[in-house]
Length: 209
Image (cartoon, rainbow, N blue to C red; front, top):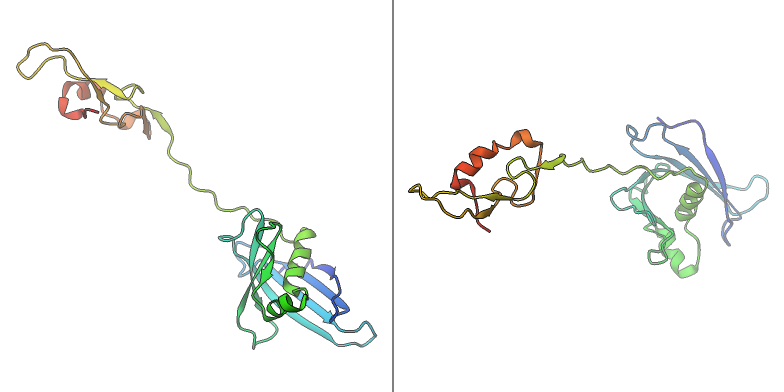
């Protein structure tokens, strides 16, 4: 469903068109709509009364996977002309290293004849008027909380057995903690780590650095 609050904007004239008007109809709920909104562009070659108006309406969808803070990428589909089934890719940019561009035929010809692309001009005008707020990108899921390792008490090292297999006392050695890998941290809380006494009692739980 498209909202009923249109945004009407005058675009700068070109040598070909004396009047260019863009009308933006944003979608009410972008999470459930098939596009961000609809853009209608009306062109007139003459300002005289009764002059023919060339009108096209487009479905506009931002490609969030490609958009950045410096430039935005939109998919533009003509809803008026059934012969224009191709989806245009229109980039509007504030980055001097990434110029604004459009894959429509008019824009390709415009590079040679220095004529503005109506899709670029219209989307820039809508953005400047606040009609295309930057949507929030999905945030990555937070990592599980990290806690001090319960096996080494957060030191990353543990003391090896104080007696050999025959029961003779020996100088204890320090080993990398076999549960946290020497980081001193573990995910999910201390309750996931076996008791420290069990670790120290069994030399098979240790790995020497």
